[in-house]
Image (spheres, rainbow over the protein chains, first blue to last red):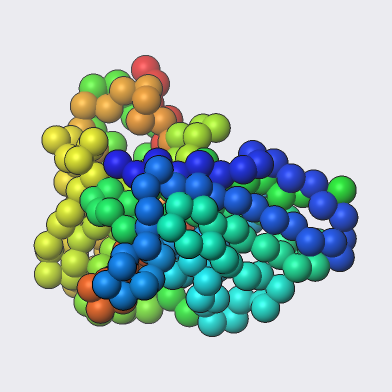
Length: 114
Length: 121
């Protein structure tokens, strides 16, 4: 199974500041034939269902604010929130779907307000 | 916007079978694939398996010997059975819609709230 490792485990950022979450995979998620990275990001707020934010490493889902962006390729990926809002407090997970079954997730990064 | 709701016992005895049901609110169960995931306390998310509306299944190899996922399209429901449970199966269990993007991706684009199942005597 592909192991996904996120860093940091928790993060405190001031409102309006940039938040950066990293995700590293144990093998490349880049499929050379189509040049796509098979990685998704999810947001899980307390008391709510998890929400898909980004697929293909950088494609935002419909309705996701543009302050959220995904980047990276191969084994190293980043979720960036350009200007942190109070409603962004959540746990964020990356997930690979390059090698299935099974899909695998990172352990999560808890984002809080400083 | 589709809503998913898990239901089932919150407490299961060791060696018994954990059974959960997920109800799909908008009648779209025949149009998609559906999945179960779980999150043990303090740990990350683990995919359990998926099912198509026609009954095709795929399970996590780590759980395959103990898992059965079934679907009842007449009730807009799909279900999870996990047998021979131990304390290690204590987790929040989520149902989710499984998107294949035409066959090229495996992501979860709509989730239930999750339900805590504790395995204890």
